Length: 255
Ligand code: G
Ligand code: G
Ligand code: MN
Ligand code: NA
Image (cartoon, rainbow, N blue to C red; front, side, top):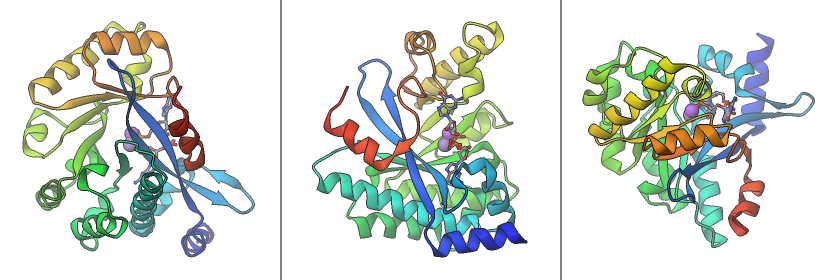
């Protein structure tokens, strides 16, 4: 297919770039980390968002190679910030299920860190409920345990949208829960969603997990979440996903 061929060309030409979105401590303020989000810098189409190419990348298996480039780029960028005397606490990358099924993910992560001279705590990986609910979940559990053994932390993304349950949280070595932005966006409008958010924060904390809220757009949402004890916030209120150079400027002159 034409699009698949384009993706292969894009991989060869290194057209995938990372944008970074800040994650902020809701109580003390200050940067807690950055989430790396992939974009396709297309020579004619401009910046293509992941929604337009990730589905085919996943279907074709090319996501595995893209994922390797994402890991490498995120580690190299972190190295570059450190070399410039800048210290974002950590960078989080998103992992697709297919990356658990091809190659040796634990070894690739170990090498990514070593080659860039980073400590394991400099990196975090985000997985989705889909990954832990996959039919090869025993194998995935084993690989996640290997990632944790390296000292790299794991966040469960889009929490609340799927069917992951308490049982899964106990069984999988997760450090943080990311509350999906659909819940955050109905805060102040939907009492049920408000109750769910409150419960996820309490439940997560009682399991020793840190809670990150995604998609925070207003000060009211941030206020409610911080009042409920949510640890970290991410969303347009604090910053959109931005190119590395823009992060550099913000790190040089924090607001
Ligand atoms: O801004 P946003 O459009 O960046 O991201 C849309 C979706 O794409 C999100 O669900 C996000 O998790 C996913 N995504 C972004 N970057 C990556 C990546 O590097 N790998 C994978 N597997 N998913 C990503
Ligand atoms: O990995 P994940 O599915 O969580 O990707 C985060 C997605 O959410 C990205 O597409 C990112 O651009 C988007 N996003 C981040 N902050 C906000 C926000 O405050 N509002 C909205 N609508 N989307 C956001
Ligand atoms: Mn994510
Ligand atoms: Na996310």
